[in-house]
Amino acid sequence: MRRENNFDILRLALAFVVVLFHIGYISGASTFAGLPRYFSGHLAVEGFFAVSGFLIFASWERASSLRDYAIKRAARILPGYWLGTALCLAIAFYYGSYHVGRFLFANLSFATFLGSTIPGVFPSNSSQVLNGALWTIKIEVMFYVAVPLIVWLCRRLQRDAVLWTLFALSIIYRVAMSAHETLALQLPGQLSFFMVGALIHYHLQWFEAHGRWVVLAAAIMFAAHAFTGWFALRPAAVSTLTLGAALLLPAVKGPTRWGDFSYGTYVLHWPIIQIVVATGLYLSRPWAAFTLTLVAVAIAAVISWFVVEKPSLALAHSRRIKTPYPAVTPS
Image 1 (cartoon, rainbow, N blue to C red):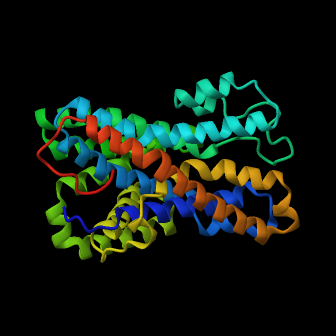
Image 2: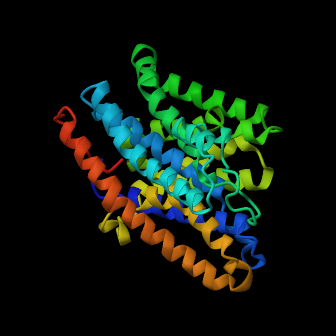
């Protein structure tokens, strides 16, 4: 895979979509109530999972050992996640609430649904959830765990048959659980997007050679999904369009020339929105609150990258068993 690609800027754009979605969802400001209609957080998350499918399978294939793979994955996801948890604890202590045991256990175990609130925190906000964006992280972690097992199966059976079977089973699960949205959105229901990313990784040369026609077919498929509402059309369409933007368009750097700010944006934006909501600014001066939120999220993401994420990745790289295959992109 060529080094010049759009993965970093695409992930940052997807994270920004999630920020706008959540501002509309939890700010309580009528000015921004329509944002979720135009900026779909679910669509952005699905794009994230497609990108992860491509990059995580690539990461495993480049790893010299399971230990090497585990160190790299842990260094990428844990420090920023812990920073997001620490921010929530700081907010709780500011409110004088120290009953954080359940919240801390839920977050450190990635089971955020077990304790998403802390008593006495954000009492006047429409939602008291401290960081509602973290529900996807447990799915990402389970993807990390699953990839070595999936590759093991692929090497003993027929690789594409395994990947397509998992893709189909995921869609069957999602459709079967359509009446139970919370369960439908969990790991089996998101695996189809991840599998398309894996398939494109393993057929990258073919995808680059026939990309324009594949992307056109995906666009038609997505239009058909929008018209019919058939979920079965969505995973292949969303994942292909996302990876087409990452791999086939001319490379765009933008702010990512200085660092990968997408993860910090994602894990820190929700509590920052909640802080601004708690000030009442979204009700009195919504555009000022909106601007303050975006500036604060941007600053927090930069701090997260340069102070926490980048040093952690450098430390992990120094401890990993060296591999003769160079990393082609941050992942």
